[in-house]
Length: 439
Image 1 (cartoon, rainbow, N blue to C red):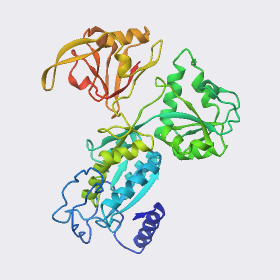
Image 2 (cartoon, one colour; image 1 turned 180 degrees about the horizontal axis):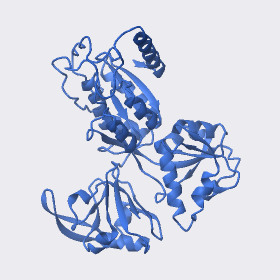
Image 3 (cartoon, rainbow, N blue to C red; image 1 turned 45 degrees about the vertical axis):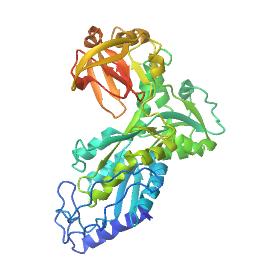
Image 4 (cartoon, rainbow, N blue to C red; image 1 turned 30 degrees about the vertical axis):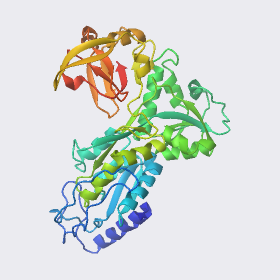
């Protein structure tokens, strides 16, 4: 059984009224107050997967009540409150249905909103058990507010951008250059929203290329008539014809494909958004919350996310090749482009022996200098930034990379691409590469 956000709002209002009558003060994000009574321990450990699908064992149920009892606003042992980015709405609703069926008596309440709103609510003390953000920055905001413990977050899915128009496309938009048409009505998410920042990143990348020119980004931004609080608002307004175009995630566009048109953003200009998920530090139901996270990270959860158009990050999901993500190279280069595993196979292959954390290994791949030659690094470039699908980045001087004659791009067994830099420490080696930016 699932409670709606309205029910959650009513519960919070009731607690506020009770607080006015002299009950203990509401919980603060930094240090929860002592509770009057500890909740009863759950009668059985929750299962994670339905009987017809492979199971993912959750962590063991506690044998005693938590030492820090929740406040009066806390859920019972069978209730979970999940704060999740708006773009996850449909996929997470289906995941909740399956998780509740596998764990009878469990009630999941969702709070879907822009990730920046969710992080702010968490840091204001809103009770929650799990936080799923559309980018790492808002997860860091929750970490800075002590609501999430640093290092516990895990990337669980990826997404990418697409330009959308109303179905009848009254502005006649057929190319990305058309977004700069005078008088065009463009709708974007606010820059504080992950998809809004990703949209600005796209415009910035385009402006750095000869195909679009430096004036592209400011000209397009001059056409913005509305900045929205979340990606679903952008989708809705464009579908209703309140704007001539907007930028959303491909997963959102797929949900309303009959009412919109779509214009693809090439890999070299796109952003692969990595979504992290984490247990809220003061969760009243940590065992059940961790079981939910395990389900999302497991085969059934990943299959559901892929069904809704997301790119799987963990393991192998039906219908998806999570590792087979092209590496987009952008920035101060003559020819922005992406390289898939198949593209790399067309280059001369070299074999090198390097020492990683486990000792000497032999790796086959393509010389990174050959890739840099193919895209044409500009003379003003000084830095290279490698970014993985989980959001991990490694930055080093471009001259150091070019001086490493044995630096390669290698393809792992699952199709994921990684860099191997013999002259650099392993912390500069990034698995699951999605972007290489030359700055």
